[in-house]
Each structure stands twice: as structure tokens, then as C-alpha cells.
Image (cartoon, rainbow, N blue to C red; front, side, top):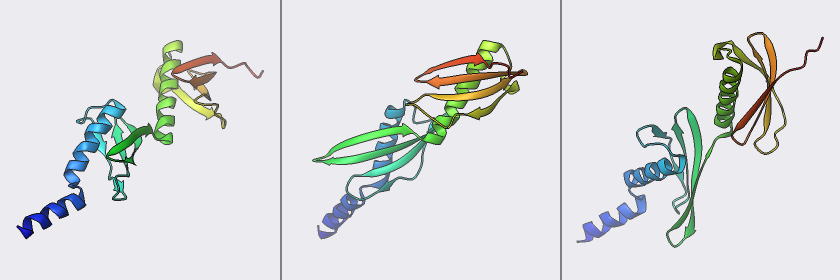
Length: 152
């Protein structure tokens, strides 16, 4: 009997790592709208009090996730695309949009620069597509591209 109590106590103390991992997989899948089959979870780091940080990768996008214990078995769980991954995604969307607007193949479009500034989610890029220069602005799910004025 003592052995069973000790075993159950150890199980509770360790948090059953596979059960925690399965739960994080399910929650992350819902938060980032990605099936568990498409997703890879990185190692999780917890403090033993229900606060856990982990990363998830889905469709070449990386997310930073965290669970915060608010007390009484209530958790706040968030996942946000990492800044590096968000920039890669934005750059890809800008190139896709310019290719669509100009009929220039994506492999002939080069990002030649990007703004140092950001206003909210807005960011500007300079691109060269099929021999012409463009400026594209990306913000909140939209991309606007304009042919750059000639410096001649």
C-alpha cells in the first residue's frame, strides 16, 4: 500500500511528462490552427508550478507558446509567431503579391531592402522584379506595391 501511495505521489510530482506533452500538442494545435500531424513541438521548459514555455513549428512557421498558471487550475495559454518567422512569412507574402501583380516569376524577384521602422504591423520593402524597382508596404494582412520612381 505504501508503495502505491509513493508511486502515485511521484506521478503527481513529475506531472506525467507524456500527458503534459499530449495536452500541449492538442492545445497548440488549436491555438495556431495546425493539425498535430503537421506540427512539431520543441522542448518545454516549466517551473513546476504550471508555468510552461515551448516552441511549435508548423508549415515553416515558428511559434513561441506559453502557459501561465493563474491559480486554482486556471491557465492562460498563448502562442505567437516568433519575430524571425513572422518576417520570413511577410517577405514571402510580399514577393507572392508582387509576382501576382507584375506577372514576374518569383525567382526573378529580389528584396533589396526593408525599412528599419515598423508602425504596428506595417513595414516597407524595396524590391527588384524583372528589371524594375518597386516599393511594397505590408500591414495587417494587406500588401500594396507601387513601381518606384526613377532616379534619372
